[in-house]
Image (cartoon, rainbow, N blue to C red):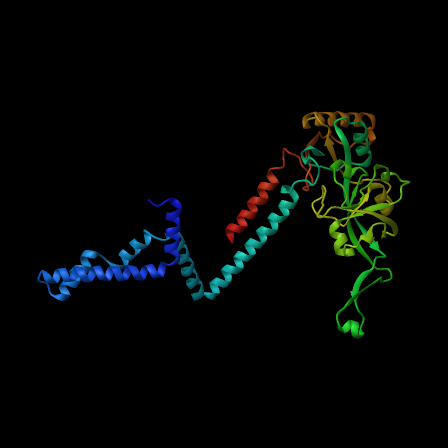
Length: 388
């Protein structure tokens, strides 16, 4: 008795030599037809009558062949390839329809891929941190994640639920004085299409920077790929201006040169020293990989704004044994004390409760309202694919 493996191997063998088995079956069928016709001839029928009676008794040749194929080989696979061949013949007969169908599917799949990639980066990708389930973002129940620097320092100095509170915001600076590759002016070098690095007088380029508190990387539990991250004391106005370069920007702009460490970059007319290279593809709590990471106090020097952390977001790491609900209750109590002690610093209108949510790269993480956005986005993606 055949085992399951032997039976499967026999089926696969029959599928691979389907043409030969069809020929063998046709020869065997012709032999049976001839023998049956001879039997009818011996019974007194003419040759034509005997041949016809034999065909009627055996049945149609095509039906017999299909029934034989169903008992051997891999009928589902064979049917699939038959459908493919039929579809290709139909498309070849209608090139205009084929072009429109391919273009429509390409656009639909491309749009869906782009939308899902963006959604994955903002919502599905886990936070790049040690024990990310303990890193919380503090926001208001009206989905406003913005806090002032004074609010941040109040919560940081008075809370007991977090091992540390860090702040973050986004800024664009102008970087100048860095060699830039420009097309050669002429001659043999220009004819060869070689680009030479040289500094253009007054040339500058915009760079995207995530501005963070000095303890930001410590709160996330992330180390630099090269060099070091910020120290808490580098939030001091007296500290030397420093920055981290993202790994992606380091490879793209500085060709991965290790000599970038210790180098001074000129941002908004101020020299800032590179002290480290961030891990590859590190976004922290931002949606995309920035070019630079800059301390809060350095930002205030670069922008000449009187206030630090204009519209910042606050993140904290829960202490062991402290639940999200306990931390949320304490933060709301601190918010009430802040309104009582500094009424002039609070916003007008009714106070808005603070809520905690798991930090990710999507920004605001209000758990009570975070379902509608993803469902709407995924529904839109599905509708576009359905239309395509």
